Image: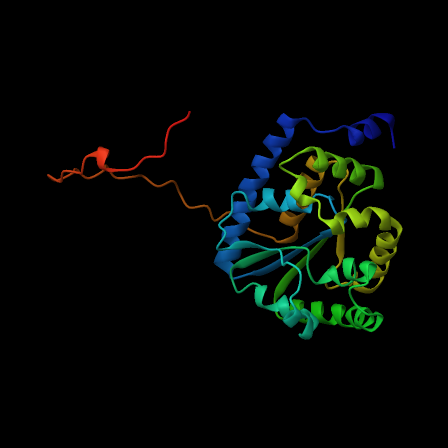
Length: 268
C-alpha cells in the first residue's frame, strides 16, 4: 500500500464530512424503508460486539429518520424465571418481523454464546445445544423469507477502556456502565475466546457475520450503514412533492380565549 493510500485510510473523518455523509445515507435509508414496506420484505439485523463497541450509536443513526412502525429496535432485558424455562429462542421469535418490517436486535440470541457463556449463566450442555441449534434456527429464518444480516462490532482493548473511562466521567452516560460491563473488563481474553468459538459455529453461508471495525465511531457508523444499504437491492419510491391547498377559513368559528389554557412556563 502506498504512503498516500495508507495516510488516507488512517485519516479520521471531520465532523462536517461525517454529518454530510450521514445525511445522504439517512435519505437512502428512508428509500430502503419504503421499498421494504412496498415489497413486503422481512428484514432482521443483529448487532453484537463487546461492551462500548458502538452498537447503540449506529442503531440510533439508522432509526433517526425512519418510521418506528416499520423499523423497530428490540433490546431485551434479563430473562425472567419463566423465560428461563422456555425453549431458548422462544423469547426472540415474537419480535421477528412481519411483511414490510425491519427489526434491529440490539444484542440477540447470541447472548448465550457471549455473556452467558463467559459469566457462567448457562450450563455447558445449554451452551453446546445453542451452538448446534443456532445455525439451523437461522437457516429456518432465511428459508422462511427473512433477510438476516449479522454485524459484529470489533473494538480494541485500549479503545474500550477509553470509552469506559469516558462514561464514568460523563453523568449522562454513566448509566450505560452496568456491573456486568465492569466485570467484562477483567475477562477480555475469555470474551475473545467466546467470540472466536461463536464465529466458528455460526458464521454460515446463509447468514454470515460481517465485522465492523469500530475503533473510530463515526467511521463505523458510516461503514455499517453503507453496507446495510448494499445488502438489499432497492429502488427509489419517494413520492412526488405534494402541493398543499390553501387553508380553509374559520367560517365564523370563534376559538376560546388563550388565557383559558395552561401553558408550560417559558424559561427560554
